Structure formats: C-alpha cells, structure tokens
Amino acid sequence: MELAFAENCSEGKFLLVVAKIVDAKLTETAIPCDQLSNKEVKQKYFKLPALILAEKQTLYGAPAIACYLARNSPLYKGDDRPFIDSWLSTFAAENSKVSSNVILPILGHKDYTNKFYHESLAEFKTFLHHLNSVNEFLVGSSLTLADLYGAAVLFKPFALIVDEGQKKAFGKVVEWFKRVTGEAAFAEVFGAPRFCKMALRPFLPAADTKKSKKKDSDSSSSSSSSSSDSDDGKKDKKKKEKKDKKDKKNKKDKKKNKDKDKDKDKKDKDKDDKDEEEVLKKPKNPLDQLPESPFVVDDFKRKFFANKTPETKRKFIQDYFWSNFDDKGWALWYIDYVKAEDECEVLYKTSNLLGGFIWRIDTMGRYGFGVHGIFGEEPNLELRGLYLWRGTEIPFFVKDHPSFEFYKTRKIDPKSEEDRKITEDFWCADEDEKVLGLRYREGKYFR
Image (cartoon, rainbow, N blue to C red):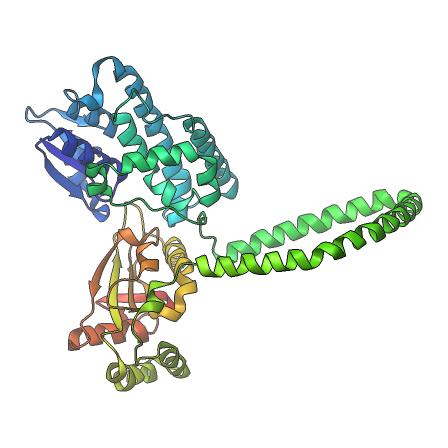
C-alpha cells in the first residue's frame, strides 16, 4: 500500500500515527507543497491524502483511510464505530473551516475579511465549548480514531489561536488534548504540542490599516455631526441635571476618599510585592544566557546603515563584517520558502506573506540581522532570506514562528567564498539586481 499526502499536513501526519499504532506496512509519499499543483502529481493521485491499495483501488480522505487501516484494531471497534464515524466527520468539517478561514489567513497564505475571519473564529470557539464536556476519551473508555483525529485537527489551532485565558475556559479539552498528544506514536510524528501565550491574528498591511482607520474616522465624524444637531434642544435641561448629580457625588466622594487613604499604603505595598514576584517568575531568554560574544550586532548594524549605497555596503561587509564575525556566538542562515499551490504568483500578495513573517519576529531584532526578499517574476516568485542570528542554532523565536515549518534552511559557511558572496548579494542588493540567478523585486530588513 502507498500512502500519499501533502508534506507537513496534519491529516497526513494523523494517518502516519494510525499506521504506526496498527503496524500497517506502507510506502510513504510526502508531496512537497510546491509540487501540489504539478499536473503529473494531480493525474497520479487526484486528491490527497490518498491510499493506493495493492489491487489498484484507491481510498481518498483522512477519515476513510484511517477507518480502513484500523478496521481490525481497537482504534475502530465494533459497536463504537457509528460514534467514531460521527466524530471523524465532525472534525473533518471543523478542520476545513478553521484551516481555510482562520489558520491560512494567520500564516499569510490567504486573503481575508475581518468580518468573515471573526465569524469563523467564533464558530470554532463554540465548537471547543461543545467539546469541553469530553471525558477521558471521546468514545468509550480507550483511545480511538476519534481522539487521534481530533488532536491532529486541534494541533495547529492550539499553537496559534487558543491563548492562556481560553485554555482555562476549555480545561477539559486541554486535558484530553495533552493525554492524546502524549501517546508515543503521536508524539513521534507530531512532536510536542505548543501552546500560544497570546493568540495570533492575520497580518494586515500598513496601507490597509490606514484605510480601515480613515473609514472608522469618517464614520465617527459623520455620526457626531448628525447627533449634535438633534441634541441642541436638550442641552439646558441636561446641564441642570448634571450639576445636581455632581453636588451629590462630591459629598459621597469626600467620605469615600477618607477610607481610600487608609488602604492606599497597604495596596501599594501589595502591588510592589506582586510585581516583584512576577519579575522573579518571568522565564529567562535562553539567548541571554549564552556566553558573551566579541561581535556586537548593534555596532555592526549602525555602521552598516551608515553606508548609503549598495557598493559601500558591500565593501563594508567585506572589510568589517567578515573580520569581526564570531562563529562561536553567531550563525548565518539561508532560508527558502516552500510554496503551496497558487502561492507567490502575484507580487502584492507575496509582499503580504513577507510582511507577515517579519512582523512576527520584529521584536527580536536585538538578536540578529538579515534581509528577507522576493525574487523572480510573476507568476513564479520566490521568498528567500539570509539571516544572522544569535547562537549557533536557529533560535527559539524563529522555530516558534507559525510559518517557519514551510521554510527550507541551510547554514551558511563563513569560510566559503561562495557563501560569503551569497551573503553580500542578499544584504547589499539593489532593486532589479540578480541574487542566486533571480531578479530582486523587494525586501525587508530584520533589524
């Protein structure tokens, strides 16, 4: 049997988990995202995920394939099957909605409208509320396909949109989710689950933000103008009522202030103690715990941007950067985005993808430097970057980025003349210059 699925897809990973548990003998074919629109791939598999059986019959869709693989196992047992089927279809529907309308806009893979996005997000949270009545397992008293598929569907949302407050509100769901994702086979395929402290939102380009604010401002001023005309006849009456209320309020406030003064010192002390506790509890940034490096990135950035032309910047890199670079405290990384079907075809949409990536790591600028750009021609644009990051491995804030799993990475060798030239080309290129054989269209600094 051959199992074909889209690379890094939660449904494909779910099927790998099932195959491991039931010990199914499969040939695994992971299709890279940039090949999903390939005609040969579409002709061969038609739809993913797909299970091609020995007798040349094919099953499509994660629920159907999972049921076939687990047909003789406790994951899909007799009398429980109707209830398991019900959960599988429910999770499939939720996966389609939350992926398309919430997750993809957050990752920058799809355009969105605020109204539709928030409606879909509200529907998802309603579903979590319904799921919050779960016991140890969804069906019966042991692990089934329903649990595995549910955890796979929720794996990405928990990492991106279910924040700390919502975790408390959906306590039973979280407990169940941790139990299922802790299963050895699940953890081996998916890795450890991640929970976001603050829910992410789709990246809104600056131009769209200004339009939105202008629209709100115009609406507000229009409303204010119309309401002021209708209220003119009521002003005198309201002034008298306000004066009477103010006099009564002043009398009450005098009494309250006496009591407040007594408690003020105690509250201030309690607040100071609480703030001190929060500081002590705050986890330390692992990058701050690294041994001190002689390379000072802020000095490098200040001197780099003091050079105003690509030629002087390149000379500065050649003369200053390579002689001062500390390869024990810093590392250079080339990253290349693996496009999904219909991505990176239009320049402005690709620019939104680029802006969303930089926006989510921008606060960590003191731990690095880099250029992330768009290269090539429509409809075959490429998103690539070359970064300098603190430490000798890719730092945590990059690994935790919701889009990072869609990037291929390569560590740059600072002693290689070829890699040195690639670094200089990325950091110093002017618009329309060639970088790795493709025209440089636009880019952003990570600084």
